[in-house]
Length: 342
Ligand SMILES: *Cc1c(COP(=O)(O)O)cnc(C)c1O
Image 1 (tube, helix red, strand yellow):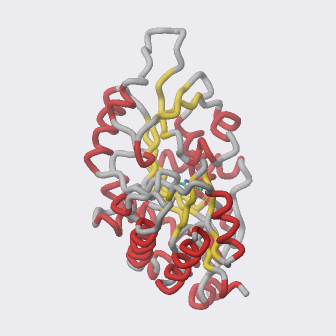
Image 2: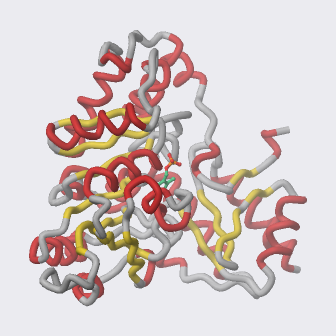
């Protein structure tokens, strides 16, 4: 049955492959909570190196990476954080930044889930005015999820970081799909992460591992992050079992993200040819395809009935390509959309 469903709901829908499961089954493990799991330790070292940071900490999820990062940077003293209106901590972390860190959250506007340095500058507070919150943290999402998988150009990031420097802001990179950005652009992960005090990658998205993410930064920040990990109940025991899936993914599933990007572009180009679908395929840079139709709910339900899963967000339809959907699957999805709209 699962074989007959084309699941474009998200790149979180991937199943660990037989080879990945084998690597997990064979992993050397220990007590992660005491720093004694060799596979977790190796993974943390690999990610620190990949992101060009001193250290990294393995966490159960990307959401915990964001929440711990917010806690690291935000003091519950009226500190304000700046991020795109559609960014994950605003849309999908259950309000945690407010509850766990006491953050004031200022959503920024901009196309494709990105914002201009000038949009950030326009929101900066006057530190001498005791009426105002304190400007403290800026976050960038690379690639932008609800913004359509867009890749922030390095020059645009540099503008944002320049404003951050000018105003003494802390900086955080949500790299849930950072490696999609590196494969699409040819930029290195370390160069994208440079200039951000904390950055992380997710193994459970397009990389195809079942669990986990790594948050990286200075030794000092990551030592502090380990305290919050323990506080939130994120410390684990024989976590090398899942870390081995992540290590396998880093070795085998990065370069192949290019196939997902090609499939997403193919889907977008096919959709653009259909009457009643609105999408500019040139904006599809990675594995996320967001498009508009007159009645997204009905289309979504008709597709589901035809064995094609997509998701709905803010009145739009989203399809995400990943390693469990091949070109034939994307062609089938396209045919299903054509039939559903006919
Ligand atoms: C998925 C996602 C997260 C959260 O990661 P989980 O591992 O699902 O908790 C954070 N930010 C972005 C941009 C995401 O796409």
